[in-house]
Image (cartoon, rainbow, N blue to C red; front, top):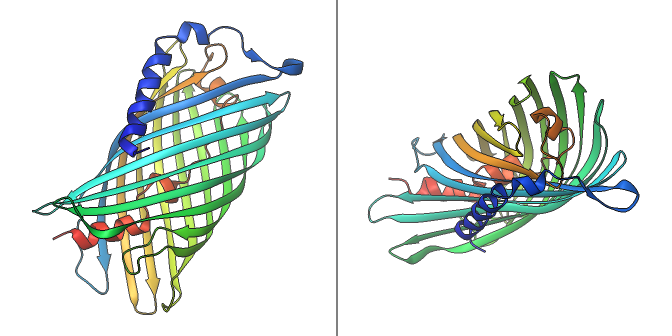
Length: 326
């Protein structure tokens, strides 16, 4: 499924379920021994602007990426324990120069989580996912480089603490390992391994309004045949404002992100700065309409999506954008 088709299907699904919210407000979907099934879907779009610098070539401002995304999670909960299945897709598109180069980057995952949660205290759990990446660049309809794809395993643990009605704080760390999409230098994937970690806080000034601030760090290595050891490290800082429409299961959100990543070996470095803005809608299903945004979050899905490997254009896509820029 292409990124555009995925975004269209997800948006259509959101529209359909939004028209049936009265059905979703009925009693929880109940399984054996009082277990419940619930979920969360979201979709939206935005822009991601990029700045490139290096000690080897002049600085550039490559084309701005257009974005569309969709995510979904389904939870099965029994007492204090929850099992989750989830997936996401983030599509990025850009056009460079004249005659135009058309760049496409798709990132996403399928995965799941298992966690213990007490709605008055917090949660602890583990998560896993298979991240997939695909890149292409064409000019006048003809490929400039062969299309390339990659796949990464991501395994981690996470926790949250609930600070009464006012705030939630959380943290997580994941190990990543696999073959990253990497066609800029060699037509093959590259061995990519390392760690990601995040720390965040969400404030609830009112029942229907939430503010989130989050920091992420990346420490990893890229290995290519006949090439020196290469590090791929960085950080990201993001913020989000979310509003839950009263007496409904629908919320609207807007987010902003700044990220800086550096590819470095003994020959020099390439640095990428991304400024990203997104808007979207979330819909919770499988139970009564949330009494508050805080209530939805503390009974809902864990965010199992990688900032560096999914929400941002991947390394190969950033390099392709830089190479195509005038």
